Image (cartoon, rainbow over the protein chains, first blue to last red):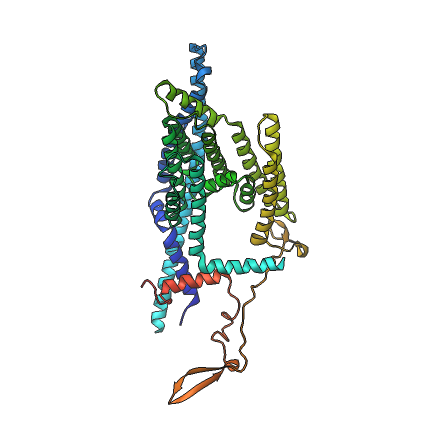
Length: 133
Length: 363
């Protein structure tokens, strides 16, 4: 006879196995600190590239204004502004990426934990059923 | 109203039954719309802008994840830009790369909003999607919507000034590069529309999550008004040439779409609202409970009067059973004899697949 509880459990597990398990397993192989650090570092690298592109595009846009009356003090000011902008963006992104990847790791860990718990419950149910038979 | 609710139930059951085909169909329709819009607006490469190519791309993207469609659309746009002029393609590629770096690296799930927003702008209904997203999504959805608006205006700019950006050589290339970068980043109309859409989403979302009665209706109407006012104010202040009629019309359509979405996704009866008050050791609770309006889709039942059914031969004697005296298979279980909800149908389907009960199970 069909056991509704067991079927529901199996359906939930099958759905998880189909969708998220591969990614979650990959994430949960890392320690939280390692995962967050690695991804924050990657984010910083991408952010640097992005900032470079953004700065280059704005430099192209305002090329005439920048090159007009170009002096050492103007170059220093523009360079300082660019570095200040980069540092500000870096801080925002590092904090944001830290929160984002910490949350992602926590959620993945919880899902994997729940999956293993369901797996052991299913095992117990099967053992119980075999004993009955 | 009750008819709408019955339709909603029927639609839910229908979707649960044929969800795979419906998703593929919708994805194909979106893909066809997106690729058709790109090819009809900036079809500089003749081979890529043919109907066969459009349909082929849409068909391929229909069975793949949505992010593939976004990437295919990006590649197609860049291909057309490259045919027109190399500097235009380079700047556009850098701008698309920026979108990837600052948003899509983190979240690819809502990438389809970029395509949908660009299409809605092309169809002159810019505020319908922001209102819908504000009602159903999160504030983070404002970013893909802004990216969609940006992409649309990039294409719009190239379409409008394609002769100016045509490939030259040497100095002309540099001039084109500077001119296109400047025009694409300093497009005031684009920034006004980005601001209107983003603020509309945030505004609709912030009202929708309030516990006031008819929050969804208020949110849709206020969001539409807000978006139209921002666009109109920007238009007047910056002396732009945005036509106001499509904005107002899209605001009205947005409100209607909001009402429809409320029926489909919320449908509560505010007249029967209950206010509860209780406490535990740590808190005092004031709870507002609004009951949902629930209807069950009517089931078609055909009653056969005086009809007899052959149930097979038993010992050379025909065994006739009266239909009216037959007991339904599910009688007594109390489970299958009531209309099934979408969840139950989905669960049953996944279970029968999993257990191989549908006759063509994988095991």
